[in-house]
Image (cartoon, rainbow, N blue to C red; front, side):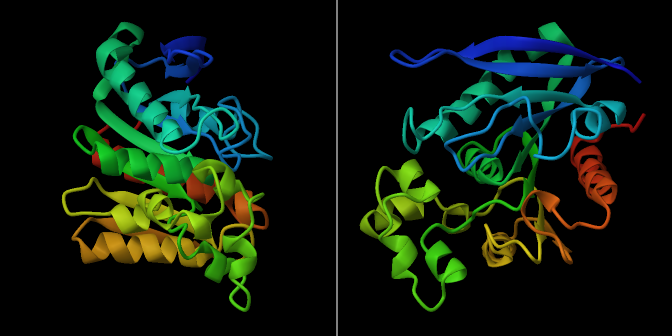
Length: 269
């Protein structure tokens, strides 16, 4: 199965900011359920053109379209452009655009899954929490989940090292150190915003991730479970961030695609 790619489709324009665009990766069989992909990069870097560092298009977007799904890889404003909640607003805006215009491109917006990696997983989770209606599921790959405790997870002997640091990626997202913005950090923490009635989550995290410790995903899954939200948790032995050291990345995609197929009711091709 081959995929058509429609690039640089503008989905939102906010006064004073650059237009936000998405790329549509489309399988032959349409209308297709759609994966809204949110890229990582610590909220300050990254591109919708890269799924996961180290993986080419054929092994990332291509795996998804080969399974019969469309992919809408979306922009969001980076932290140097606008702080939280702007990037969450942008993911929600992309979902709204797909609901209004997706059918024009052969996308079925009634069968939509949010899928993010790293900081993109954080944004995907928050977008689903904010507006869960119509979201069939969320795939969260090693995303930050509780900014209020990230310092303890990273530096248990000296959490202030993180909480007072104005140069962390998280400080860039919040507009200042995490420890100086506790209310905003809580609002930006999916694990602390979970409530009943959310769509199912598939959370996968490497046990050797030193950039975002697996304790972050453990906290998210615990919160989801406590609120009765279906949550699958995949612990990946030996894997670091970006799945570095993972023994079988193909199986991680296969698990995520099986979840996506199940929650969208899609027929695998």
